[in-house]
Length: 223
Image (cartoon, rainbow, N blue to C red):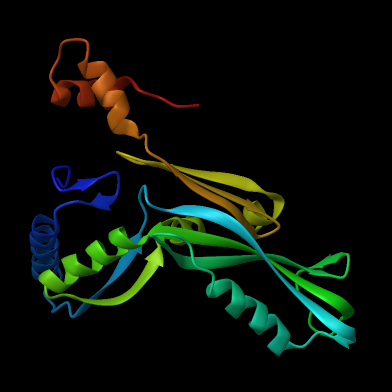
């Protein structure tokens, strides 16, 4: 139970979180009967949000778009700065070649190239605190990735992503909404409400939270 040191997916107590991580890794190593040298960390929680960004490149004469020009747009987008936030990931929406939208603009002649991006941001303090937890626990991070994107890859089919859908992950403290269309992530947001809110509402009817949780699990249904 991490509710006393992690709130809505954000670390508030580094020492207690580090102890919890250590305990989990030790338990897993015992169960698996092997040494765990590094871990993959899925990043989510309230500090995550998405913002659209457009990078434009005007060309002096009609020019054929090269892979290098596309990479330049992607790099320019990655170098964007946001107050107190940093870019975790960037999803390419599409490219605008003059007035036409293209998923792959390489080889097309144009005078103006525009890249449309969806930048996934998180608060710098949250990112730093997360890293400090694993440093304090003396556990190496193999890779950090966005948990909502990994979840979408695990549960959505290519057809669902292509035709368009919203994946809603109802957690204990937060609800994450990922919107896909034409096989591209179009929107990502985290709402600071989860199933714990339902438990607390039931508990307000003069009962213990543990009993409220049991009632929710037994009788609750969502359609």
